[in-house]
Length: 215
Image 1: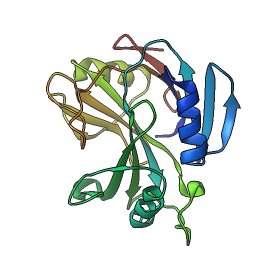
Image 2: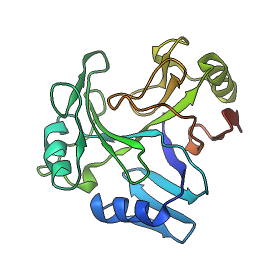
Image 3: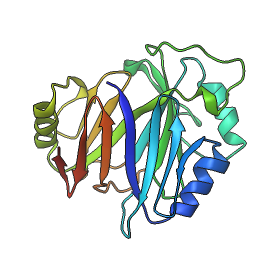
């Protein structure tokens, strides 16, 4: 599942600009008072100003085997959120390892190295090691309805989970992470899960507004 662009909303455009441009060092593509965007490998991450927003969760794919290098790289730039036995969570059933941190809007961001995503590992980890946006969270109190709405636009397989509390849709290249915000909190922070709006472009093109899929 290819994710070309994720558009999130922000009340602090300048803070987000500083974080993604200077803390992480991403290449900036759009720079205006109301919209900023950054290159994340083959994807684009965009923030549009809105006077109200709720934090969410987004993940970036990195090369398989690069998670320890990514940890060292991130430690020089920000505070990593503890997870697993230290800073890295091993998802054995997904054949993946992940590391988490907050951005300027308290979105929970993730670097994830998947064994089944083929990509050359660079000698030194850098911002150019980021491959793509690989996960977008969708918080809801009705996972099955959201699944049906996406599936009606274009068939999407269930990767993991079910409709009760957590359901991942897609594949190793791209996933929608559906979470029931009445039953679960965010991993690994245990933060409250809010219904956060976004727009996606790629193999799936829709807006998630007011808790519903709009094509």
